Every structure is written in C-alpha cells, then in structure tokens.
Image (cartoon, rainbow, N blue to C red; front, side, top):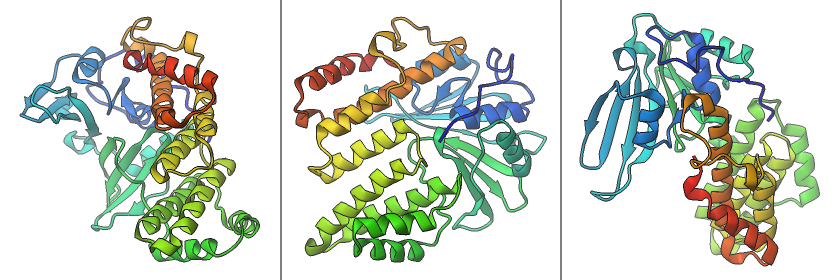
Length: 339
C-alpha cells in the first residue's frame, strides 16, 4: 500500500520525549513503528543513543527492561539466550494510562487517519473488555478498553493482527479454493476482495489459516495445500494489498518453509533484491551514518534493506545464477553494518 505519512511535525523528532505527549507524538509512533527512531529491534546501546540514558533500568539474568518518559510511559524489553550473549529486542510498549490525561481511541484513530497512516477497524479482544486495532505497515498494535480509552500501543515482530472474519468462514473459503482450478480461484477472489484497509487483513486471514491447515493436512492432501498456499501468496502480491518489499519477503519465507521448487530460488531472491529501497553503493550503514534522530529516514531505509536481504538469504543455497549469487553475497557482507 502507498504510504502518505511524511514523518513527525517540525521539532517533534528533534527533542526528547515530551513531558505531556500529544496526539502528534503517538501518531509518529504508529506511523514509524518506533519512538524517535528506537524500534523493537534496537539494541540497548542503540536506544541509549536515540533516547538517552535518563531511564529506569532493571536487568535480570536473561531479560532487560527499561522505562522512559513521564511516569514510565514507554517500556523497552530485551532478551538473551546465553549469559554473555547479545541482548535481542523483544518489544516496546507505550502505556498512556500512566498519564493523567486519558488518550481516547477515537481521537487517536482520527489523528492517524488525517496523517495518512490509518489504523485498522477495532476488533473485540477474545478475552472480553478490550478492542484491538493495528497498523500493519509499522507493526504497531493499539489496545483500548470498552470505554474507548487506550490501554497500550505496542510494537514487535510477533503479534498477529486482529482477525475480523470468523475462522469457520475462512476455513470454508479455503476448502472451496482447494478444489477449483486457478482461473476460478481468481474470479472467486476478485468478487470477494474488500476495500483497503480491510484488504490486508482479508488476505492475511486466508494465508494464515491456509498455513495452519497445511500443518494438519493428511499426506494425500499436502501437495494441494502447498499449491494453494503459494497461489495465495502470489495473488496477494498481485492484488496491491501489500507493498513490494512485504510481498517479496513473505514469498521468500513461504518458499523456504515449504521447500517449494516453484517459484525458483533465483526468482525469489531477485524479487527481494529488486525491492531494495536503495542501491548497494548508497545504502546507509553504521560506517557512513550516525545513529541519531536527525538520521531517522536513513536508518529506516537501512533497516528495510536489512529485512529484504535477510529474507533473500533464506534461499541463498539454491540460487543458480552466478551474478545473482555474487550480488546477494555482497549484500550479505553488509548486514552487520546495517541498522
């Protein structure tokens, strides 16, 4: 999907976390998936460089927790799997309820819509008493209570988006798609695709449930489910629901997971490299770009490149084209220096 958000208002990205955050601050988090450039994947040192060291820190054996901002508004969490291993970003979360003035979901959704980074429609939480909505492009989820007050704004790589369609309806759709030829599948999809922003969730519901059904499939049905899963991935990309980078990375993950012979590794890797936001000679790295709030755009470009290269590397061992293999290897050598 085309992004319209142009970044934080003048002065917002240049200062510290405001003592009394307004809607512009929260919208910037929703749009960017970060707090002034500090996202869920940043190392503790990266977060210190971006947000400073004025925080409460609680280290444990395998967890590290920091709280920033007024009344501990923002929490960052890291985890490690070895006593002397690197800290790996787990998630960050804003808790507006820790402040005196409540943040209302209706106001936040209106402000995000006006800024060109709309949140999805709220969906009731399965536990009751709360609703959830999200911004897929930035990996942010917003949870509010049934009175409309925002409880948390969280970003990480693990939260599944809300499911606006019943699981039974999605399963029935997949069973139908499983038994019809590709031309009929295309017509079925074209008749039923909702409008954005629901289009993303619709495709995601089909893809996720298809992966689940594939895991449960009897041996005699597995090949048919594999073909349907790949078909869904390719046609989700064609539908325009997702941007080029998202589609290329998702296809790489699916082809690697299913060990599918088609599309070929060369096609998958070429798709990832073609979607890179910058040429290799021009990519911002830690060698040529300072980790600082003034360089947020460059850092985001670098992170986008890193994600695409990581996805392409899943298929590295099966690439046949020597030139393509060499280009991927050159990008791989840059990985440790990307943000």
